[in-house]
Structure formats: structure tokens, C-alpha cells
Amino acid sequence: MSWTAAPGDMAPDFTLQTDDGGSLSLSGLRGRKAVLYFYPKADTPGCTQESMDFNRLRPDFESSGVAIVGVSADPVEAQEKFRAKYGLAFPLASDTGHEMLEAYGVWAEKSMYGRKFMGIVRSTFLIGADGRIARVWRNVKVPGHAEEVLVAAKDL
Image (cartoon, rainbow, N blue to C red; front, side, top):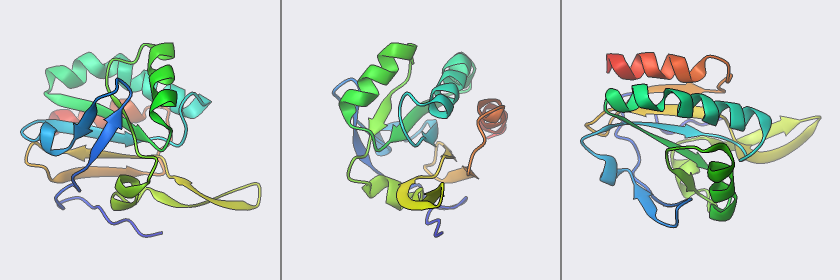
């Protein structure tokens, strides 16, 4: 598996549609720290828990000057329903074409029950205000993850 974006690298810029019908770009967040968390599919158990954990800690991230953005390959409509259903208070971005997912190295071959397929490897990137990747978590296990990211964000 090839991971193209690593700590110390400039984070690949992107412009993606968001669940509110707008768009979001990394360059638009420049000057601010950001957490980009990549999740496989909206409204599935692990993705819901991860999103709820980031949402619960959102005030702490915000007081540390950190923006949170969730990204998946789900269409905008699915992201919109997911955000509304769980009251998520940060943007969810949609990369149905996988360009950003590939640039960050999170679109990869996966295997489940002996079947191979392409999908998102649950990953999180902490990006500094200078646009450089400060930390990367790959193959994320959800319990305690948002808390770990918050500690790293506060130290950045």
C-alpha cells in the first residue's frame, strides 16, 4: 500500500463539495490547523461513532484553533443526510472521483471475507497552520481516536 502524504509534507490541496451544498478547499483553511478524517461510509457503525466522537470534542478542537473536516467517497446527498441525522457541527466533504483520497493515499485495495475491493482506509491527518502534515494515523481504530487527535492538535 502506497501512502503518498506523510508528516512534514505539504498537505495536498483540494476543493471538494460539502454536505451543505458549498465547497471546501485546504487553501481556504490555510492559517488554521485542521483535522481531516477519512471514513469509509456514512451512517455505518464505525463511521458514525468516529464522527460522533469528533463532534463531541469539537468545542475543544475549536478552542485550540483546529477545524474538523470529515471526508468520504459518499455522494453529497448521503453526507447531508448523515450530518443531519447525527447533528454533526462540522463539514463533511465528498470525493466521489477519489482524486483527493488518492493524493492522501487513503484510497486503497481492501479485503473483507476474502473479497478484494477498492475503498477508503480509515485514516486521519493533522495539518498545521502552515499547510504541512504534522501527524498521520492510518488504519484507525475508533475507540479513543478523537481524543488522541485532540491531544496531538493541542501540542501542535
